Image 1 (tube, rainbow, N blue to C red):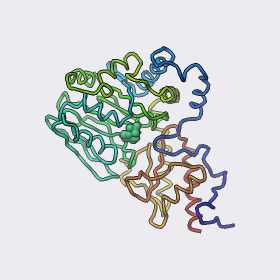
Image 2 (cartoon, rainbow, N blue to C red):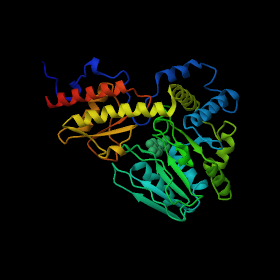
Image 3 (cartoon, protein in one colour):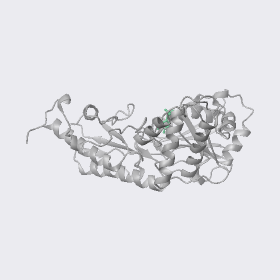
Image 4 (cartoon, rainbow, N blue to C red):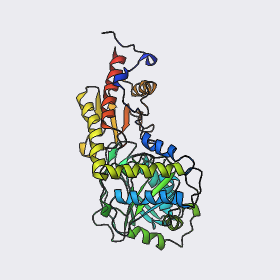
Length: 379
Ligand SMILES: *Cc1c(COP(=O)(O)O)cnc(C)c1O
């Protein structure tokens, strides 16, 4: 056999090994081509029309109903939405969901950012941080006086998933706020265990960025009213967002493509079999990668405890002799993109999204591609 060449520009992965779709990024993530086609097919009837009219409001309604169905929200829960993504939602929550004492499970970049936002907010008196090392998650504990417990269902920066559960012993009126940005739509969850399950749609829900959505329990909706007297910028005011959302609108202009692609993905997920189907699919895709890594001497799952391994974002450490940055670069040159480790984690690692839009077969193909690249580099 002719040895593959070893400089990065010359490693050409054979076409028959390549995945059908080479997008493995954790956000923005793969948007299904079928959804993009459906958007294009709206032609002159949707894009470029008023978000205050039925054409767009009907799609917002599809999104709100679709997410509600997918999450099997009990009666009384409402899906709210607004502009700014999950990052903006941290500030939104700080104004009209957190009374004055929050407690955060911190185990990576995203969970730490919410805690930091609350620490910097002058109207929040106390912020507790329950922390663990990257690659693990802490156990959330309850304390009297905490009015908002802040969890992250899937820490996208490390590939650690943590169970969504109300902390035992929490005050009766404490809220459980869950950052579900990369989990929602790809992992099972019990709506009885959260008050707010919020997300940006460019991750497991295969749409675009720029929007936040929040499934809110009756207790969360009551908290919005309770904090109505606190000063809040209108663009971050959850009361204003709620009033608009209930009319299938947003306070200010949203990106219409984001809403359309999200509606398409929610319909697709619900048609395939909802969260149970999505959970099985992401377990299969991530399982392909974890099993492959465990079978290689030069690769291993970053998250050592299998119970904490994410099914939607798979992180694989490579051995010291193999430069993961170079591997990702070569993959990219071959059309297989965004397998790079989370930049701030700083590990010799590939990070591979295994969201529902990504097929298990493409994950299998990706393992063959990485094998090929590693062998070529060794040769
Ligand atoms: C991506 C991400 C965010 C930030 O989302 P933006 O849309 O960029 O604001 C927050 N939390 C988690 C868990 C994420 O994965």
